[in-house]
Image 1: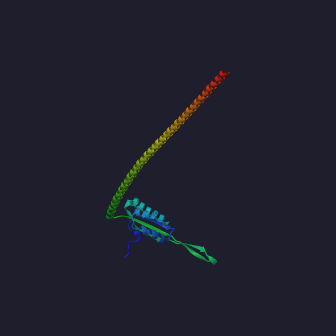
Image 2 (image 1 turned 45 degrees about the vertical axis):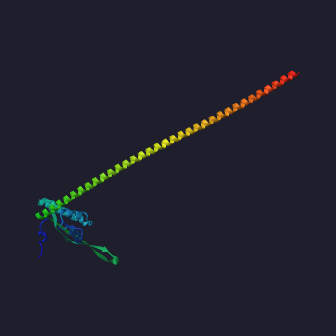
Length: 243
């Protein structure tokens, strides 16, 4: 028992004829997107590394556009019902080889067909419920992310405030140390000045003592000179009396 014929399959179709790629390479991509929704199939084709994915994506967009324009369907309600690749004509070319021989080059082509159809009402309800659950999960994840960001911001602000207070304490400590060092320097300078004044007073006292000693010595010398003068005067008087 076989299914419906290719031209009798329900849905809206689009076809790319004589695509310059082999049917084998195109089928590898078509097998990935068969039965997927339009959004999922588009994501698969966009992230595929095969060059034929661009051609298949254009065919899928054309089929969805036909469904929207001709059948009045919404793109969000469509899925890839059927997709296949038929072999097209093969171009024969020749490649020169050694000793005058030649080998055949087969440049294959294919016809790519994509058919999209609308989900049933039950399937749409299931998909909508799944989307609502996903949306609620996304909202919960977003709210959780926002809470985490707020908590991190609050923790960062608390750390910055703590660092600021610590810096202020350090600044106060540095100011106190500078003030203490300045007071010590001033005190040491005052002590030096006091010691210098004491040394000056002692030097002045020494000078005064030296001056007093010199005065006493001068007085003794003057006393001796006076005594000598008196003695000499007495001798002169005695001499005059004898004469």
